[in-house]
Image (cartoon, rainbow, N blue to C red; front, side, top):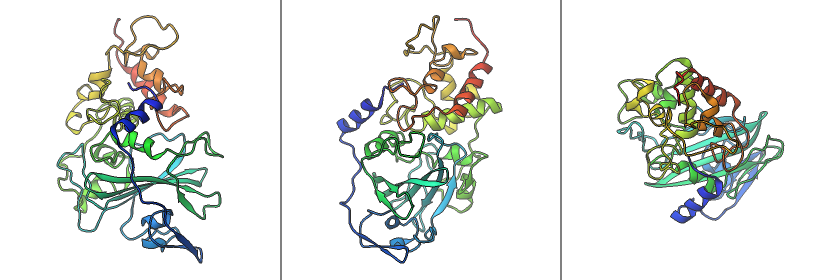
Length: 346
């Protein structure tokens, strides 16, 4: 598994990868709305609420902007989230590789974060050219009248349980896990029974996929197995622990992303093959004794995976970025799965 925040940021800097953007331009408040005069300094100028901020006052989604909720979601320290996508008219998502979707130039994504109903930030992705995404975020004012671009991030947002708004470099660190940089809008999560809005089935029905799947990818196993595998897929595998060379944890061994061709059984998944019963290089500071495995069947106390998702110490925690509060629901799901596995003698 990968180390900590510093290592991730240093790697990004070493690769010369960054999020490019134009200098901030001007905008004007007009009768509760926003008039955009070029540039993307204000969230209203991104098209989420109509071109030029026309729908800002009523927070009315712009033409063609679609809401979606993946059935598997990344833990964000308990904040509520809403997600939106805009595909250029007449285009389709290239799904010739079901596990590596490629999006048409012009595609836009937004993800809104709220704490107790109050908007905190909205993240924005825009594919401006092939292989080039603008990624940035917008910080909402306390009264939610404005949302302005914030590129350097913000730690410990007031009024939240320590929520952190990522910098552009932090965004890149995770989004490198997919070849086209999009994480949550993908086959397994959109095919999940808890997905809503623009789901995989809806995309196929509307002709928005170049290669609609003959059968939707479903997570195999019992409810206990499906919950744990799904949580690990979205929180660990999609961004980092997969085979893509650019993924920050591609070198580490565990393959926790669920691949559509490996869903015939739990045992066929990369998660099972590369984690269950596999020796772990990580050792906790306390003396656990005995063999320490990535997933020790029937034994959470000797499972490095469970130990690390249960921690928020910087050099230990998983995921390593973007969270300061343990996901107790996810942790419990992984523990139940580990305990359900048949214990083997070390």
